[in-house]
Image (cartoon, rainbow, N blue to C red; front, side, top):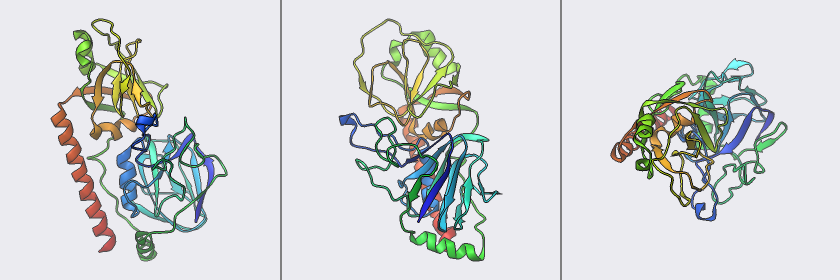
Length: 328
């Protein structure tokens, strides 16, 4: 079983939930920018939640399936079609042999995910299939997909067999509700807890962080979102040693324009950290396109933990609903 890449689009990589345990060696975590879409896609095709997907950025990817395959498309809406017929999102889909899946231009969001029943048959590197582009490790030959690549697939799982039989009789005509987990609006209120150097910024800058609107610049990628807006300043200059950073850390470089570190962030950073985006809001942040706007909202650590737990409960409810739909 395999998938052939007819057009790589802007950028398509293989991503799972990341490469943990190696940051002490300078190896980044990486992984899917929108982890919720990846996890939900895997649930829809019977995979473990961390299985690798194709992460498709903004537009243009075209794939041909060389065997009948169960897939799910989640995340951004790029108006996908299968053999020129609109394909459903957030639902299991049985794709027939030789069918062509094409992604067009994004109408909302910036990253779509294709989950494949059984997964993509590539080796793990340091415990992950994720593509680390700068180090050229993981994924498919350590790089983004190119026209002509052929991706080997793992043998089908039990759910694929069951869904395939069901679809022979009745098309799957349901989808899951993702709205309470991810938003695709072009203006977002993103929740943030104060960073370790928040108090070192002057009062005016602290006020601006919570009240001003920032725009995601065109110089943004999987490593970081550069924001444009009001400049933020320290009360006084000071020397800061590089220290650990994570997905969602908001740093302020000398220019005063914030940078939000994303999935392919470095392991350490030396700029003052004014805030930290809460984990529950990272998937929504990851779906914002360049020129989209953000307003930050301060929350406490307890509120951040509560939001995270609530979202995990919602994912468990979806998991149980999928099992009921497919096995009853």
